[in-house]
Length: 76
Image (cartoon, one colour):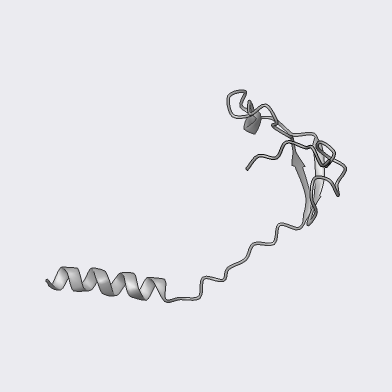
């Protein structure tokens, strides 16, 4: 009983803090578009990526990716 109370108290106190931590991702980033979903199997993470984009901003704003059109295939 005491152990259950202690665990409950620890969980309540650990969840009550301010969790509004933010990480600023602004800046230039190296990237590679993986439209065929082969990046993991080909271990792109071990390579030096050559294409760049700037955040904040979208792929379209950075002139990357497929053009946005009414008949574009959207996946999520």
